[in-house]
Length: 589
Ligand code: GLC
Image 1 (tube, protein in one colour):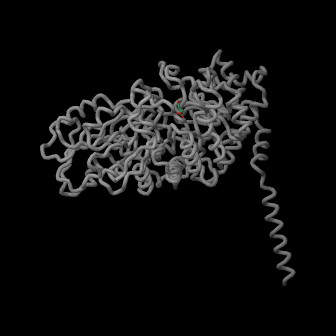
Image 2: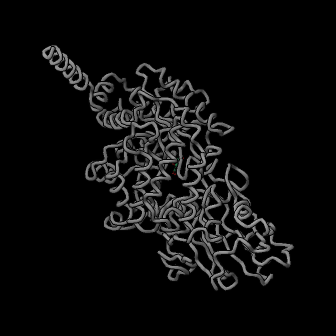
């Protein structure tokens, strides 16, 4: 009897050993697949196309496309979760019809929640999260974003932006955690851990993509688009570049980043997309980055020379995947010609494809290429919104609190709320929400500040809403004025002078005449000019771009929670040598 049991156990152990030993390593799987691929199939893997340019999704099959993205304005016309999942799976279906059945990797800018999807939870933009200094909370927000993204079959987010912004006149300041490189490194790594979880193979996990490599936040004013900042030239020493702008990528790689997006900007006159020293020698060799590099949107076409030179220069510099994103046939044919004419060595093509395939294996895409529809019901859930509400709470910075006017009592007799932004989810969310630039209005599900105020106060409190600050009731004990910037993204937000919208300033000038206590709530993507409001208001809360959970603001306004937020940017005035509030400033109760 014992003999039989022993022999059974030995056979069982041998079977287990054989099973595991026969399990190929990812490297072996990559090599095996690569060895079967034609040049066209390899170049297809290096090609990323925006979904809006794939009018015939079967082109994914015809051209062996390796990645599809939905940039700022692409996606299903009615962006519900189910429509998104159907939209993404349709491209995947054609990828799996190819000879080698290599799945596409679908990418989206889920930069503050999967905010292009209607009813997804929209978190505070990074400038607000920077004021929390809470890496656990930021990781939790990213984990939720991963669930609300992967549930749609999208396994890659072009985030976190780890720009270390040095000039707040840049329109992408709100995408940055801070002017401080250590804080950016800390929170950027937290997002990577949240996105990627314990394993990229986990169905909730998505691939992070720290961006934009490198020095995007340090460009010189006047060198960018429209002679402003965006996509400009960062003119600093290599020592400064490494200490300020490279540090977040060192942390990102240590925290498992397997894709990095390259910056439109230049360093001392050399376009990043052509900078072999930084892309290959520093990032891939010195820092041992073993993921893949993706270009930014049509960015290789900003390089010198004709298109063939641009393709050869960018691929040879170290770009592995090109966000074309439109004329993919031209890109594919041009890169093929570069290889056949010896302008791009096959070893560079094979290195790029190895990196891409490895990440696809790490993500488990070959086993689970489609949306896991079970997850969709978690999208926009109450518990997800509770976490976002906590993030809003902790991001708020109280800048002024004269005579301890804050927190307000919930038993006031009459509160008057002014400013159209008080009842505007689009203004609360800012750019990269439903669309590229974002927009005012009722664009997605959430709680506006006005709705949150009405839910917070006692049933005996009267709340009047006067969007334009006229007809303020005589018996209103306090005016809550919600003002700020219009939604914008990228170069559309570049400015000589960050300030609230002119229309909001007119409303303030009107209510200042009321001689009532005024609480200012700022919905801004960066520090703005507020010096003239300081002596005309009692309290000032900066809520940044808080996203959908407006109750996080009233949690602080009415004192259910004490404010913890501390400025992650110096609050400069127009005079760059003078600030209104220092980095790290923030009042509490
Ligand atoms: C944009 C941005 C980049 C974004 C990409 C795809 O131009 O620079 O941050 O991820 O295009 O939308």
